[in-house]
Amino acid sequence: MSMKKNKYESLLEPLQQELSNVARWLQHTGKRLVIVFEGRDAAGKGGSIHAIAQRLNPRQVRVAALAKPTERERTQWYFQRYAGQLPAAGECVMFDRSWYNRAGVERVMGYCTPAEYALFLQQVPLFERMLVEDGILLFKYWLAVDQEEQEARFAERAQDPLKRWKLSPIDLEARRLYAEYGRARDAMLRASHTRHAPWHIVDFNDQRRGRLNLIRHLLEHVPDVALAAETLKLPPLGHAPLAERYTTKIKPIRSYY
Image 1 (tube, rainbow, N blue to C red):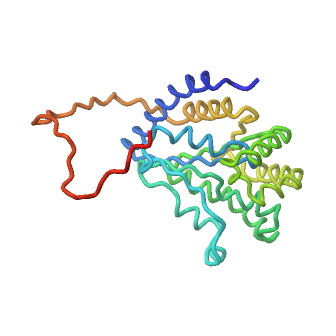
Image 2: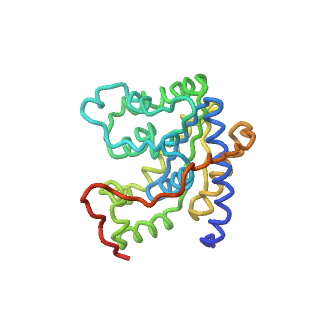
């Protein structure tokens, strides 16, 4: 049974408070955090990222969701454009899909050559080892969803005009290639599930429960982030509150509600 919205929200709020503590700890220590979200189409990557970032400073906690590479980027080292998105001191970057595009959609849809794919599987453990050895905290999550549930979400998106943008031609083609994507996923996990950068598989057939489990796992596996609570005291205003006035002749828009 799917988790009810009110229960989900009551459980999410304290987790978001803990995430705020993590953000303060990152700023205080200068640590860098990278979270990779991968999974089948409609698994729930965007909702999970939103749940984590919702209460955090967007200048500190960023989302990297890269479009397809340009012709120039196609000639670069594959990891180059992703390396440019990595966090600086005190930052967190969440990859809504990542360098693992090469092991998934590019492999299945033929957007890369067999040689490029083989080289990726060879290099990705080395690339991630360099990130970890440089001090980056790296978490990789695979959001697992059954085909029946995925189909239900596709149908909902197709019927809802506000969600239809989430359905791309590639998403529709992925329905036909479901088994091929599964084989590509398994090959990817075998090649890149390492001690220094392990994968974590999360059941996302219930998206709300999946988000909570993912966030709880993340919070349990970052280092101890306890910091003394900060007290913020506003200084005296110094004068009586003033009404907002403008010297220009520009009129505010009319009130619609």
